[in-house]
Image (cartoon, rainbow, N blue to C red; front, top):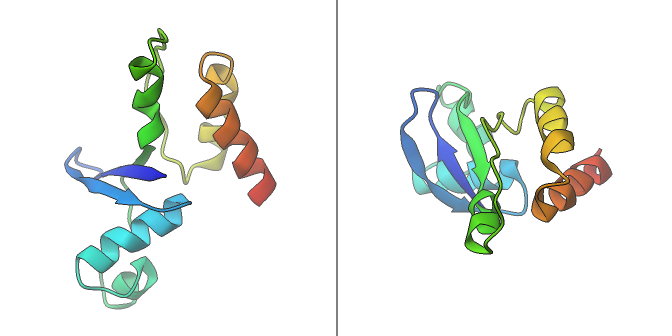
Length: 106
């Protein structure tokens, strides 16, 4: 799965592959020359505080589904993301699937 990573200032930092948001952040950090996001932070890079958006957010539109997802919260904000996913899961099967995966990861 891919994730679009956007800075807190709204700058698109790129799309990175990973099974989880953390793996996508690690891929971004490796692209910048670090071993991982944790390595980047250990070397003085500020912790990531932007937004991580699953690339599947655009797939529903590509499949012809009329989905208005509104503002998608940062995936690291478990409470906000969970509430958002619950609200939109009926509209988008990918959201329901990802929400279930997140619950299973605990």
